[in-house]
Structure formats: C-alpha cells, structure tokens
Length: 198
Figure 1 (tube, rainbow, N blue to C red):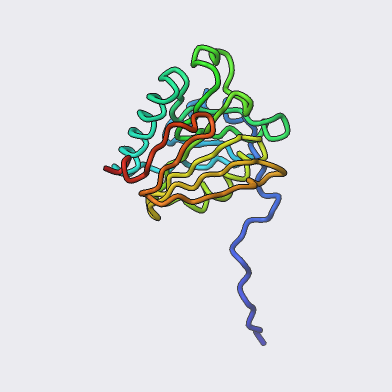
Figure 2 (figure 1 turned 180 degrees about the horizontal axis):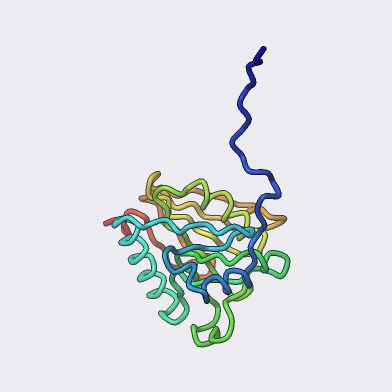
C-alpha cells in the first residue's frame, strides 16, 4: 500500500557549489562570461548589482559631487573596487557606491585602495537596506573601514557606522533627512539627506 511522504526542502546540498575567488572572477571576466550583468564578489558569492532607480542615480551623483567639493575630485572614487585585508581578500571585492581616499587617484594605478587608504565608504540604497546595513557593514567593519555611510532613501536617513572592532561597528547612528552629518575626516563640513534629495 502506498504511503504518503512529506516533501523535502528545495535546497541544494551545502557542498553543491564552491566559493569563487577573485582569480576565478578575473578568468570569467576575461572569457566574457560576466559581461551581461554587473556583480561584486562578497564571501565567494557573485552578488548582482541592483539596477539603479532614477532617485538612486541622482542621490549618488549629488553625494559624489558634495564629497568631491569637500575632499577634492581626485580623492573620491565612484563604483570602483576596493581591497579588503588578506584574510578577506581572496573571496571579496566590494564596489562601494563612493569611497573617499587618503591619496589621489593616481596613487592607485596598479592596485585597488586598501582599508588604510580609505577615509569613508558610502552606499546609497532604495531596496537593499538589509544587505547594505548587514552583510556589507560586517565586511567593512572586519576590514577596519573607519567610517561607513548608508544613505537609506526608503527610510529617509543616513546611517553612519564608526569605530570598527571585531567585525562590528561600535557606533551606529541614524540621522534623519533634516539632520546634519559630518565625516570624521572633515568635521567642519556637513550634509543633509534632504539637501541631496532636493
């Protein structure tokens, strides 16, 4: 007589795939296999870069413009890869929306900026808050990135992460759209999300 059987979870076995390395990604890119979509490598996984809404695009443009006014155009990179420490390096190559560097762009002709080269990293988010405030924040804290901003457009706030230690930020403060936010590397200057949003 047939016996009813419960369905099993529709999950792949844990060892069904392997983590990718930066070298793997370079080989895939050289072969043209990554040309159809933009990715960033986080913990050995290719994470698709989300399409940007007009609001995201405009906010990022205005943020980068402000950062360049404060720090100088050659000290601000937009959507370019950064390196993480050796322990995280082989399987991580994040591409933050914006990064403010201690040295000018020409200092990085042959390598990506490392955490010690970075004053501030910023992400603009409309729909990926959990990822940007969770996984990305943890990677940046583990790397020792001294300051990380998330411009959370859905909740109309800038979430400022500072004081990285043991894979976490010791200080995480949310500023409403009408509150001034100053970077650690330029405390006399400030920006408001409301200003960036017009």
